[in-house]
Amino acid sequence: MNPFPLVLASASPRRLTLLEQIGVTPDSVIASEIDETPLRDESPRLYAIRMARAKSDAIDVAGAFVLAADTVVAAGRRILPKADSESEARQCLTLLSGRRHRVMTAVAVRAPDGRGAERLSESIVTFARLSDDEINAYLATGEWSGKAGGYAIQGKAACFIRALSGSHSNVVGLPLFETARLLRGFGWSLP
Image 1 (cartoon, rainbow, N blue to C red):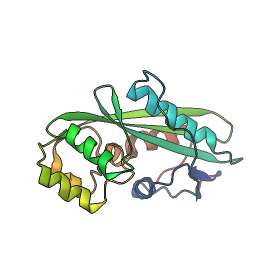
Image 2: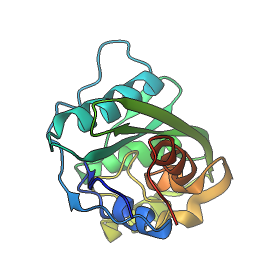
Image 3: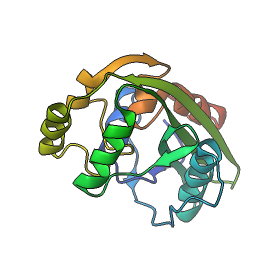
């Protein structure tokens, strides 16, 4: 149906599942290896866009569409890490407890002819106030590992969410509306 293959520049199983939800199955999945260190004074929005673009540019597959994304959890101008340790996840959850934060996912598509485009989705998530016991129980699940902001909305952390304004798929890691629009804009056929 589509004349060119599609490469997903991400090792995230969540992004693969989300794409399948809208009928898109990448021909290959190649994780991009880039430096993800934020620049000094870089806003969360610009950081997300820069990372998504860098991830798509890092994959060099001739004659293919490349789709990349980057999700950022931000408390004010502070970019929260992808939690690599329990203490890092605890710090994130303690900071997010009882307050609103923003989740931004930038999506970048590079066409076989070299043209590229990006879109950004932004959602506001409000956490309930979390007790130490709730944080400890969540940390014990291990679900936080490698997740921006130290939580996964599609998992057990869903019970922490008082309110969500915006795209649920954005918070999971790939805003489907923006992704479909980008692909269609380059002539990609979606079911």
